[in-house]
Length: 343
Image (cartoon, rainbow, N blue to C red; front, side):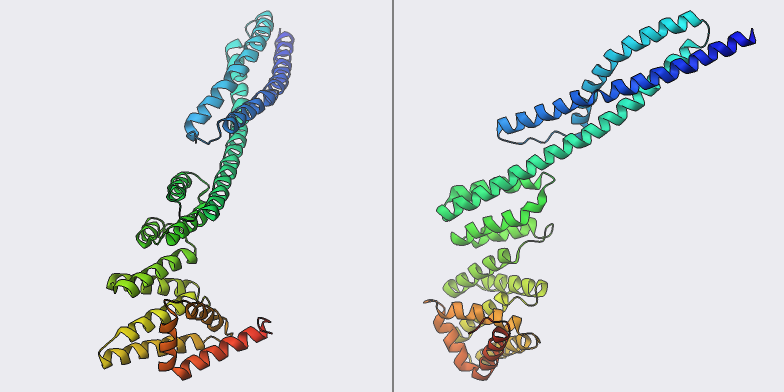
């Protein structure tokens, strides 16, 4: 009797091993079916020409259901066969054995679903990032063709909204800079202010985004004498200088701003205070040992000198502080000679 029980247990163990092997093979065989789900999903995205993000929990449920259906079809077949086998053995714990089968299948299915879900999700995100980059490059080309197009600005804002709601937000600063450039071309300083206000605290925007806004506000100050525009220009320039100490664009812009101030000032004491401010600014530029800041600042000043609107302001401030500007130009020239930027 004991021999019979031992034999039956051995047969049960063998059956468990055999079923585990085949169940594992059957679950693994679902790879092809799940891979087809990936291909069908990506193909449908490409065909539609757009990307719609499915929430993770909904997408996982879809994949889980499809895999479960296929697994259950195979499971019914094997449970029937082994159920008959267990019945033949008689009274050896068919209920417990059936639970073990279900547990093995569930564990295998969970592993497959998780693996394939992660792979599918990565594929979708890669495609979404590719699509967003394509839209950005297309928008750049449209700007080159028509820099003043309002439709391009609308399209740029739409792309910003899409990027801000998906995982590929690393494209946001570049897109914001492009939309800012569009508004710079259209002389829309308040629009760039809104971009900085909406995104500046959450993302590290490009320095050119801030400087485009600063220059527009300086233009408005020169034209209308707006104190608000003057302060906006100063704040943006100081922010960029603090972030990138060797970048001279904000320093050169401030020199022009104060040159406008000095030429328009009437009270002698006010004029003297402005000169002190410019003197301190130039001394701060000269502190740098390499001369890179001086070179970059002079590059901005030279561009303003060529402007029919701003050139006379630069000439005016140079005559007021000849020694300071001579030292600034000398340091810039030395740096450029050392770095092969001058013949």
